Image 1: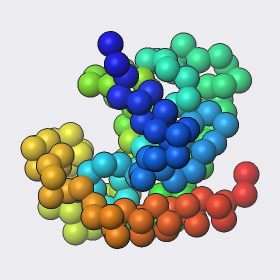
Image 2: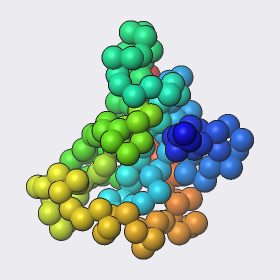
Image 3: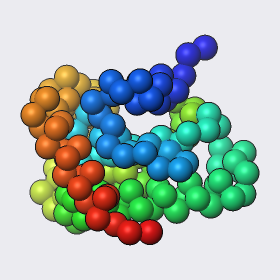
Image 4: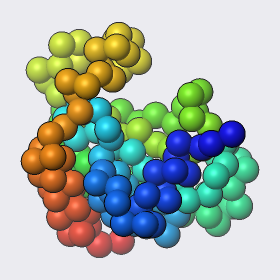
Length: 149
């Protein structure tokens, strides 16, 4: 059975994933395919594991620390009111954190992102153009490069 996250990581390694932003010791920061919430970013775990407790303790600690750094970068780059964090794995079991900026002008800013209709959030209209994607990745990369940890 193919793993979507592993495929995306392989694309990064081969140099043709346009959503790629930055590599870390334990994962990769990428802009999400769909930008219903501008700046939505995913942190892909380098290890193909389904649960946090499956990671070696030192790797797990570093993975959580690096996810937090990426989250800080998303917050500083896109200036949301709030940042949501999700590590679900229902559709793709390979661990990947969703870092979802929420803005004051969201249609339903107090409701969780999964409350809305997925057909609205994950449709072709929400895919960024090449220009927008380049802007999002450049903005986030610049911000992440400025964070020193």
